[in-house]
Amino acid sequence: MVFVLLLLVVLISLLTLNRQTPVGAEAGEQVARQILAEFGPSARVVIVAGPTVPDVAFADAARKTLMSADASVLEQVNGSPADARQALSRAVDAGTPIDAIAATGDTARWTIYDRFTEVGHDKCRSPQTYYWPTFARLDNLLSVANQTAIYAIIAIGMTMVIITGGIDLSVGSLVALASVAAAILIRDVGSGTQSNVWGVGLAFLGAIGVCGLAGLFNGFMITRFQVPPFITTLAMMMMAKGLALRLSAGESISQVPATFRWIGGGTIMGIPNPVILMFVLYVLAHLVMSQSVFGRYVYAVGGNAEASRLSGVAVNRIRLAVYTICGALAGLGGIIQSSKLGTGDPKLGLMYELDVIAAVVVGGTSLMGGEGRIFGTLIGAFIIAVIKNGMNLMNIDSYDQQVVLGAVVMLAVLIDTLKRGQR
Image (cartoon, rainbow, N blue to C red):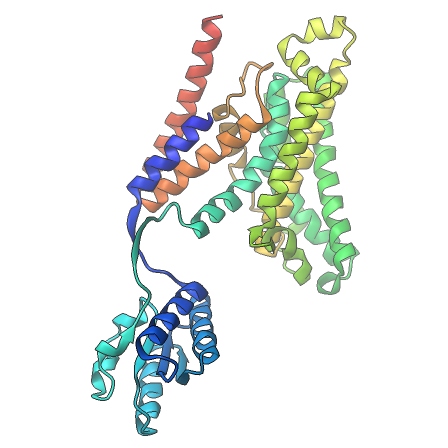
C-alpha cells in the first residue's frame, strides 16, 4: 500500500506541474534582496501588495529586509490599484526618485505604474517564478494532511470494528452529536464565550463521552440481543442525527470562546494540531493492536468468534470495547471538525461513514473480519485524500470524482476477495 501511495503522489505531482510564484514572507524577502543586490543600500523603494494575509506578510517582510540594510521605504501599500495609485502620487509629489517597486506576482501585473512617467512598469520587481507541482507545495501537503486527520482518526475505531467482523454506520451522525453536545455544554453549563480552557476541555471530554456511550449502546444491542451490526448502527445513525438536530433546534451554536478553536485550528511548529493528534493516536493504536492482549483478541474474534469463545476469550466484551472506542473516536472527530469551524453544527458528519469505511477497506482491512492493519488504514486514508486533492487540482468534475472514488473502493474489495479465494 505504501508503494501505491508513493506512485499516486508521483503521478499527481507530474500532472500538476505548473509555474509557481512565491507568496508571503518568503517572497517579500526574495524581492527585497533582489532590489538590494541591484541598487544597493541606498535604494528608494515603494512596496505594493494586496490586502490578503499572504500579501501583508509579503509587504512586512520586504520592508523589514530593506530597512535592515538601511534602504528607504517611501510608501507601503496593502490594498487595491486605487490605493497604490494614491501612494505612488504621494511619492512622486514628494520629489524623491523611486528606484524600484517591490510587488507581488499579482500586483506586478497592475497597469497603474505606466501612468507615472517617473515610475514606469520597468521598475517593478516581483518574485521569481519556478516550476513545481502544485500538489507538492508545502501548504497543499499540510492541507491534505489536515483534511485527512478527522477521517483517519475515526477510521482507527472503524478498523477495530471491521476486524471483529462488524460495521458502524453511525460515526457520521456521532460527529454531529459531539459537535452540538460540546457547544451546548459550553453555552449552558459553562460560561459561554467566557469559558476558560478547563471548561472547554471538560466540554470536549463530555461530548466524547456521550459518543462513547452511543458506541457502547451499539455494542450492547449487537452482543446482548444479536441485532445485526448493520441494522443497529443504522438505527443509531438516525437517532444521533435526530438528537443533534433536536438539541440545537437545527441551528449552529456559536456561543463558544476563542479557545474552542485551538484543537482544530491551532498549530505546533507550523504543523496543524489535528495532524499531530492523528499521528500520536495511530502510534498508540498500532501498539495496542500489535503488542497487547486486547489487540490479539480483536483479531481472534474477527477470525473465528466461536473458536475464540471456546478458548476463553470474552468475545462480547471485546465487541463492546471496539464499538465504544469507535464511538468515542467519532466524537473526537466531531470535536476537531467543530473546533475548526468555531461552532457546534448539527449538520456536520454527512456521509463521513462512507469515507471512513473506504479508507479502512482501501487500507487493506477485510470486510469479512480477522485481517487488517492500523497503519494500513492510515495509508488508505491518505490514498483517498491524495486522489481527491489531485482531482480537485486538475479541475475534474465532482460527479466524475465520485465515480473514480467508487471504482477505487470496488477495486480494493475485489483484491481482498481474490486474495481470500486463493487461500
